Amino acid sequence: MLVKNNYHECLTNLACSIRKYFGLDYKHNTLSYIDELLEAKKPKNIVTILCDGMGSKIIDRVLDENSFLIVNRLKDITTVFPATTVAATTSMMTGLNPVESGMLGWDMYFKDIDKTITTFLNSEKGDLEYKPLQEAIDFKEKHMKTKSIMEEINEKTEYSAYTLFPFGENAYDDLDDMFHIIIEKCNEEGKKYIYAYSTEPDSMMHELGTDCAPVKELILDLNKRIENLCTRIEDTIIFVVADHGHKNITNIDLNEYPDIIECLVRNTSIEPRAVNFFIKNEKKEEFVELFNKYFSNDFELYNKEDIIHSKLFGEGKENEIFRDSLGDYLAIATTDKALLYIGSEILKSHHAGYTEDEIFVPLIVIDRCKK
Image (cartoon, rainbow, N blue to C red; front, top):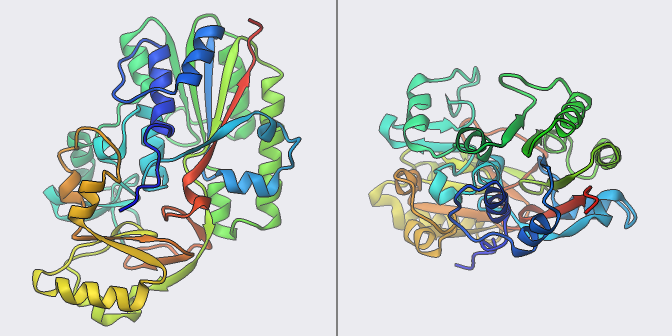
């Protein structure tokens, strides 16, 4: 298969450049042009602002050529596969590809406990109460590699690092609070790294679609806020990136295809636009025929061997759970369709497919150094 992600110039490689600047080891090539910038400027602070879902095609449609984020966009790069938050933010936070971290998608099959788990929530897919399972938490702690650059900087170097999330311990209250904390930390003494994550515009686009007025207003507001932030800090390099883009979708309920359902061993996993299928041994040929009959205009179907051989999930040492988490077949969306099964959300826009709207993300670089 043709792998469209550029694993020599993706979020993982940007993360490796940041690792390099703070004296940490790194497992993949860095971005030479980022290394050269950091070496020349030697900023006291590096700030990464990751705006979930704010892909290249979306800002191209919303912002004009004189907008702050467009003017400061160095280039477009790709996200990792799949183009989704679980995989991509983990790569940005660690410098590992999904094949290494084991963080493959929103829903994953955890073989040790024989359950399909919503990865970030630790609950079983289809559980509408989202009850966290201790066995899922234990599985992730045992197998997934998620130790962040920020944790490693604080543990292994004389520098400082901060992680800003709108959830969990020490969560920021809103975007105003997030930007206030960034300014406050940048003005403190000492070399440091700040990673700030915003759930928007992803959350709004899932609910309303990509092209509605509220989404456009939100992106315009982010552009204005980030420009204002950059006037208030010095001796800092700011990276603004996204984990993936978005595409308006048409949802297809697999329950309407009982002959397909009859072939399944368990629930689908990974993503509705990158769908993992575990198939009964005696039904594999039938499944391929049926799937292609119904969905070949909208999805490319690959078997497990294709996926492993192609290195679709990136280069690197395979996580010990990687192959067990892969189904017998993976269907990747090439148009606007999404396949829903037990526990899948009905959304207006989604990601993880293989369109340019989803896989290209902006690498925006703002230089606030006087050197």
